[in-house]
Image 1 (cartoon, helix red, strand yellow):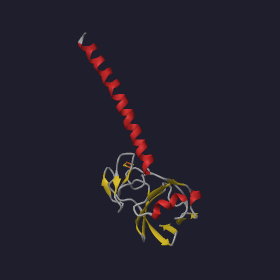
Image 2: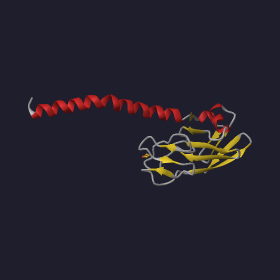
Image 3: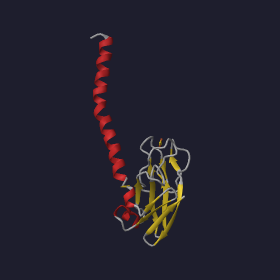
Image 4: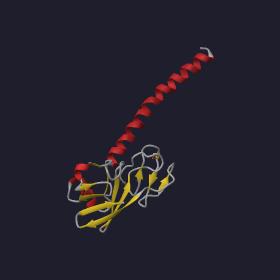
Length: 156
Ligand code: FES
């Protein structure tokens, strides 16, 4: 076998060997995204407009927020076109951030173990909305939250 033929065959072998690994990696990335994110649609809110969102913790998609450390992500809506990241921090505190990644605008996953991840380029954010892993360099947009028994109002 000539040198050129050998190199060609070696390259084909390398591509064939790496394809299953690449497919498996892509599959596991999409599984992680689905596992960590519970999407909430407009119909689940009491009210949603440009200034605020209101919802009831007793309604199914929000019941995760009744437990401390529970987190959900909403779909985009009139209040925030990328949707919200919500996290139950304590009995009296729920955190609300935009799901828009400050790096290039992709959607973030709900918080998992105190961290929200952007599946686009891998940035991660802590519960203060601060990036703990790049490439993002700026904080998430954070919203105000009022808790009135089971009714939650998120505003700008
Ligand atoms: S868009 Fe989120 S890390 Fe790039």
